[in-house]
Length: 221
Image 1 (tube, rainbow, N blue to C red):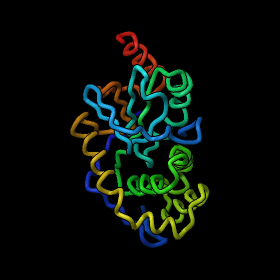
Image 2 (cartoon, helix red, strand yellow):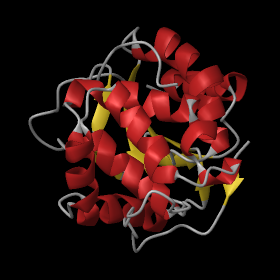
Image 3 (tube, one colour):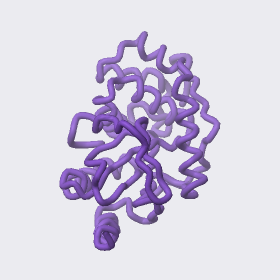
Image 4 (cartoon, rainbow, N blue to C red):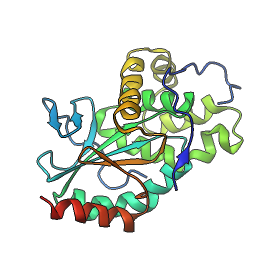
């Protein structure tokens, strides 16, 4: 189910001009940001990370995804709800979501999500996954700006706020650093990629293999 691609590390975030081509389910928003870094074997969770669940859970699961990735949208719709119900909500897993851009549009989507109030981050990402055919150029959309603007307005962002957010460079370095760390630390070359307690685990985009991997990791705790 993974999408192979060359990872875009130098982020291109321009989204000018109306004709430019370019389901995190459950709780409404992210867990309040952690106060300080949480370090474990081969991972560091920072206050900048968007998370769900108990920071003291036995397992830390990091998902690297791209908003334009159709396989990430499938994971969001088919796998994440069960992961949340059976592992995050039960206190077994502390979940971290990170964007790993495969194209410029992914970086822009992450910037927009970060410009919204923190408690709207996951609902906006869920919306983007569910509405990919309405804004993603891979589906033949030619007015990507207009498509993204519709989704941002649905979360309460004005057009002026949208344009200011896209033009801002505040998040660019951080987005790049998160991507670079995922590639260099875990050799990620596709999305979605799942890291369990600091180890990249391939082939777990579907719930069955993922639950087996999580149960095996929990059994070692």
